[in-house]
Length: 417
Image: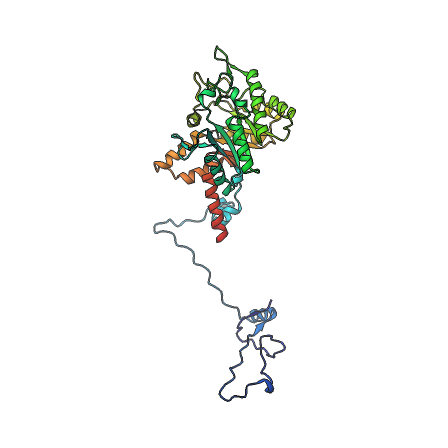
């Protein structure tokens, strides 16, 4: 490509046919005759060809360029030593932002987030004391506004958790499959407003049970498995009929995924996915969540159906059962304390893996940030990235909106540079 330049000692023959910017004088009959006006001097640009530049360099006329940058000086007192005789220095690939971004193995996107939202029958949004920034949202207004905020920054998946009035709770949790109950009504409202919104639902009896357990409780305190599964199937079908995209059994009853798949298919909901809480541990990290839904067990604990936190191999048993019964997504709960379980499922199953960053994880980061003990935003983003690195395809997180805003801000900054 030709370009304008001044080349030392390079003689060129100029003519207006060769150099297009050379402007010859006007013919006499077009020139101005007034003696008061003088013709300006002719201006032209010499455009040398690539071969002219090359010839100049060959002749020793090398164009100037910035000098070699100086080697940065070490601080005073630094010992002078020979370089270590090592061939591989991994830090070479970490020495700049551009290189670190180029070789980053794990990415984080708002599309990876599922936003858990608490809903109730009231009009007002009620703050949840143990979960700063989270609310029981009024299903008709506050919820719709919160979903709109999430969609604005790329979060288009939500999971609903209802706070059910005590008067509607019962030992068998029949309100769970009421077609005009809080969850089905909310699904219909959201689908009417946002047809492309992906709605996950929780399938379990604890929000609807007067005993606060995930299943029907026998008089001796035993959680009844098969009878509970019967109720859960009716709940899943009611949610699917309202428009749910993914039903998510969190109860940990045996055989519930297979029974649910059969029930959904029998009602024509073959397109509705099942995200099974495959490895849900009997964890102490759930406390703030139970405050949010007022769903603490009235007696005892959930250790007869949720997994022992000490167990690793047992997760493989649950994974194989859920796969064989027709689960579409496998979930691990809690998230960050169970990265090894996420990786275990990721390495042994072709199905998508979900991780639930639970209320206790969220509240600890919020508390640490409020006390200025940690940088809340950085720890939040690091924790989510770690869940992805361990193998989670999607993350259920109360940080979904806040984290997506951070990612959205970073994207805007990059696009304007």
